[in-house]
Image (cartoon, rainbow, N blue to C red; front, side):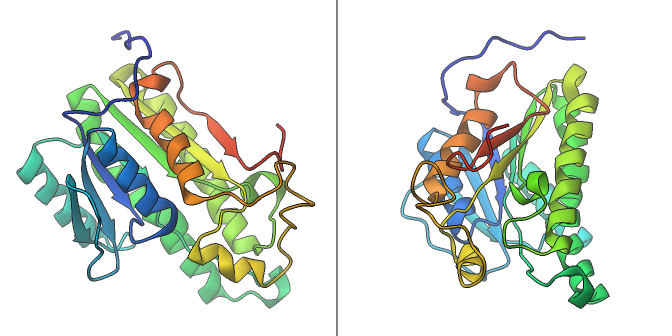
Length: 249
């Protein structure tokens, strides 16, 4: 077993990061921040094209639910860069229907994007990181998975709960190989996806959130940078709560 290095500065020069769900919200903020920290960033999403206002970011269209697209993307990044040091999993979708009103189709959609959209890239990239002796994987979970939902439905809660468990497995399996895996569990963050929640039974930013505001994508991106940088070299398998104090665990 190789001992991992001590924690250090949050710089990522020379590293290649792949980010899913990077068309907007948390994913885009994360791609920009990782590039600012020095990484070469492969930003991906299902949108045809996304503009980034800084160098060091290469956008590629990618559907996380597709195994063939996953294999093709990983092969292309390996061919172009020879490595993938960081994998950030931000792709997601949300549902609101209560259990009695939910359909099998809705459940399948939640599992396809929120769970299998994590499984596919992790399954393809984890062996490469293990062989290289280093890698950091950070997946977006949710406060909903820890408290049984905020304004989301059971299909979303179940899928995100599975992501939490999967990342703990990856962390245990990867620890001796230099591969780290953790989860960020955001509270309410003002993104396009969250706008669909705020029209329902969303928490009051001044009432339910002790810090008095909803989160911004940059709040989550900074936490992701912490977990995928040398700052966190003695942290793996954790679920980091970033929620303005809604859950004090």
